[in-house]
Length: 405
Image (tube, one colour):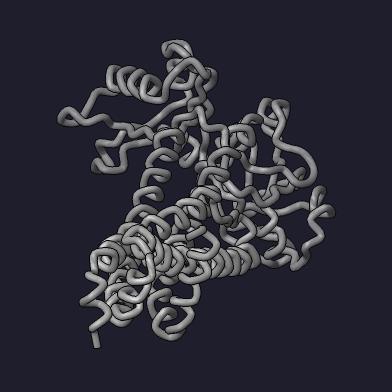
């Protein structure tokens, strides 16, 4: 018997019990669509995280006091440490200090409390803050102790009630009653390190002049390093040098360090594990669907025992019988897989669309490999779970089958 004829007969067999076939397909459809949805959402999340980190200058280490220690035992960084680390460490490109405090910003009677950071001109490069209008704090601003500020959009919007951000450079604001000229406006950056978009940047020297208590010690350093040097190596060098200078507390460093690279790897690993776990849970329904295929095929073989006997009596071989029932199982499982793929891709696309409308950073999408794998798995389920019923049908004795009621 030729393959097209076998497919036609198998389709007729499946179609003859439409409702039962649909219930069998349902398990496969739910399993496949669940797997696709879970993997698509996990993949979208990973793309977002990867995209966020890709925007950052990732070869940097964050260095600050060890907040796990009592306050009087924590280490305090100084500006002398900038040169000390730069001159002593191998592979370091720069060591950039940051001062920070929380202050009340006012403009024409309106008030807004936010973070104020004392920075040098390189702050934008390493924190990935985005300058939307005007200019950044310059080297001359730092040298001359200028009272200028670069302010986040959200802060200016709260202070002025306007979203005409291009008009803000030139405004005069007060930070704790100290006058500052706005020279730049920060845009919304998807990824930032240590400082948020909602901050006021002022020259480091000005910060230290006005807020002497907060400006005595930098809150943190960002250490940048070259492509030939590893993150772990930089952390070990910095830890050794600072422990040697400031000592330790019961063997514990007075400072703590973390790198973007290790955080990115950790987050990606967590997302991968979660995707695998959720995908595996969803895949259990595929196993249930496979058992359903076997069950329905066993029932079908029993119902069509007399038909099998007739076909064998008129010359059909055991191989013909086996291939027909195996093909029916593959059609059931594969058909369910195709429908499940359409349902899964449709639902995941809808979810991605909703998320993209709500969150501009969402980057959803269904990986091609999960579509291919889903169809391959469902076809394999049809073969594996359909083999025994098909084999059982092929071994029926034609005489006994003809006499079956």
